[in-house]
Image 1: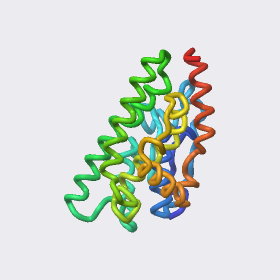
Image 2: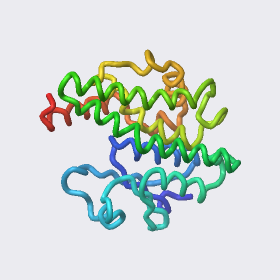
Image 3: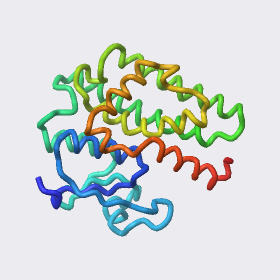
Length: 222
């Protein structure tokens, strides 16, 4: 499929956009990425027209029809391009994947935001504990598997791996290391980053950490 058929409205630091880029890469779907440069200021007319309710990226434009919200976009991608399925084949496997997708969406990034926006020591400690407690369940469900889908990299892996580009920033301002707390989860991150579909789709953690430092200054946190 040519790039003219698929476009992604994106922003370089958004972990939710990174998810979609990984999914498209896994499916070998060619696309044109259209970057928003100022999501906190002037948003483009195309973004506002494509996502008038939330006015947020990512937005997938497929034949000029907009699909919004990253988890919803991943489901759409899996249905439209069924080769190399992201979700498990059985109904039970799908139900578990959707449960953990909801868990990740509701908990991981909001808890990480609480870490890097905390000012006082007690706030940092509370936010760090909350974040690590959330990761505890993910580490537990991963267990001894290579991926959350077992032997294959799939739906839940993609949803979480995009967020991990922000983990070093959470670690820096929270005073912890995921590797020290959950070595199996850290090994999963390393294993996933070794995939070309991931390494070429994610913004470097160093660039994200610098971005977070800039936002902390802008918000008067430091």
